[in-house]
Image (cartoon, rainbow, N blue to C red; front, side, top):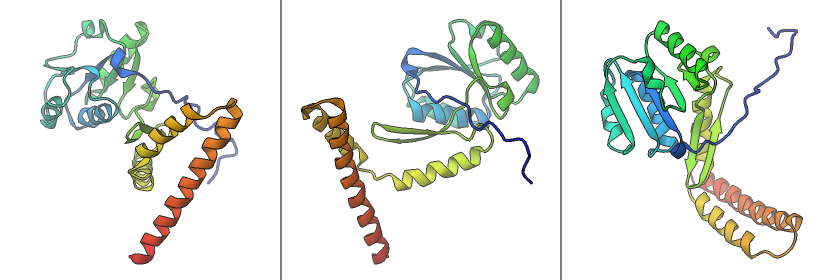
Length: 211
């Protein structure tokens, strides 16, 4: 049943943050913390990250550290001093009282915070990410359905061809070689990408016929 009052829609503003220049803190050591860690790895495994967990429930977290050279793990209770020299906080502790406490402390220090599975306490969300070469797409459902975001990611990962990097590299070279104003360059690049998309569409139809 639809509400008579129209919803404003997704008012989140998507940005791509350079994590190399940020100091990130992840609080928690369970399955949810592992999920957040995997999202961060997909974004940039070289980010400067500290993980603080009273107990390491998800042992896979230690495995992830092998590919994260700038990440430090501390097995202990969270302390207020941990927010010092921190730009971004992700809270994934299985403790509502602690989650609210950290949120409040972050707000006092003007630190952006994400509290897992609690949209009302989040300043930002970690969207589902598709990454193929230099192409990166982030999906958000405004915190309403992470499951749908995951399914959309799987769909787009299959739909976007693996050789997309080849196209991007060639488009960059073509753009640098083109003479003329901005409008002319855009028009020429649109022609190239339109032709490429038609070719991909035909190949996909042919492969379905073979199957």
